[in-house]
Image 1 (tube, rainbow, N blue to C red):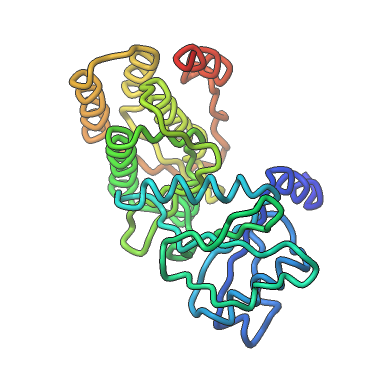
Image 2 (image 1 turned 120 degrees about the horizontal axis):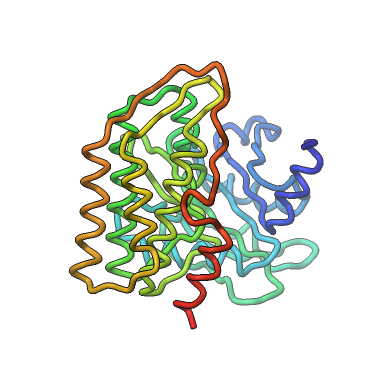
Length: 301
């Protein structure tokens, strides 16, 4: 796919995301990194205002629709006391007129609070931390993560998701390796809450784990020709497909999560050198996207 089409595809998602090194940009404005979308003149004005007041590395996200960044902020706010989820700095609004009359006001990113996002015509801006080197699980696989570390990260993700679901009803709904960062302690940090929800539908929780383990089979084959093979993957598949659409008691639900963690703990992770690209992940292995979407919708009715 051409770079132009990739850019248009990203813009269609309705968001712009910038990696901002405040100290570096003060001396070299061209050092701004575009993560999603493309640079807009008004965005440059906003980022310059943010840079004046802060130091260090941050990520600035601006949505075409204010609902996008407000959704991210509101979800993160509910998860802020839980481990394993990105903690936002702040959400603020620029008064949407020719001069952005308020962007020279102090923007305090050190407090997790709403700063005047109160009008639909405003441009709402979400500021979040830059985690480690911005590396996701995919990036770690590319660099050659240790097998034991890979399994530890997967277990942490499952435990954090389970804890969040039990305490808040949180389901991510777009859980793939590209949405899981690795921090400086090699711990996973889940991000990107555009489609997340809070409910108590167990089927949605198991669908999250199906997406996660779909990545294990689909994306554990980085371009450096190494494959990360988990020996217990078929046992995990059987378990997830068996309980996916079963509404169970809290005790049984807890037991299933522990069984999943036990299977993963007992599994071996092998790193193989590959000269041929393995077969691409078939979503039907996990029940298929259409099947999942159709059946989970019944739980919502």
